[in-house]
Image (cartoon, rainbow, N blue to C red):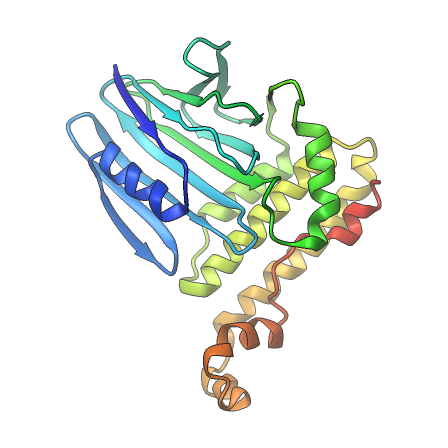
Length: 277
């Protein structure tokens, strides 16, 4: 068995550690990180990025020729992790001696840990595995308008006594979003905005489906998410010369102006979520 350890920090620190631990090659493109792994004991890719609101994701698409454990240091930002298994099987424990929970293909998991105990992931050998982890910090989230969402997440998914773990079948709406996430054809900033929007909607659906009035609220949330994603995709057809002409001498403010002009500010639909209060 191969034992690996991952220290916490910024996304760059995390992926540098992953590159070293998995003996891979790290590349970055518009803050999109990718570790290509082709060693004697592991093959595949590890990808991820961190967004402006500090939500982040890591996706493992791997196959191992040896059993592997990855011990992840506890985060100070008290994140809630949403895990989705598209292939294979993943086992998890809080600490090396904690109870084992399995996450299988077609299942989703939610976990949080407000202690100093590590999250330990166990990968089986000779079985392809594809796992998406979405991390949403509850202690250092940057956007005040998401206070209501974070309050709901804290109440639902954080156990004041220590650890929280939930595993269940994937919501079919989330399964559709995961497929959409893997099939984004756009590149650069458009791809990043689409990723953020899709992951935001996945987190919203998780919060809603654990609320008492899920069925009455899921449709407007999905309609809003679809509209936002459609707006982002319009960038692919934008006349860049027209945009630059309208900007004039925006200079350093180009990314902010671009998002505002084409209504691409990515944020959670807090107004809809507030209805669950």
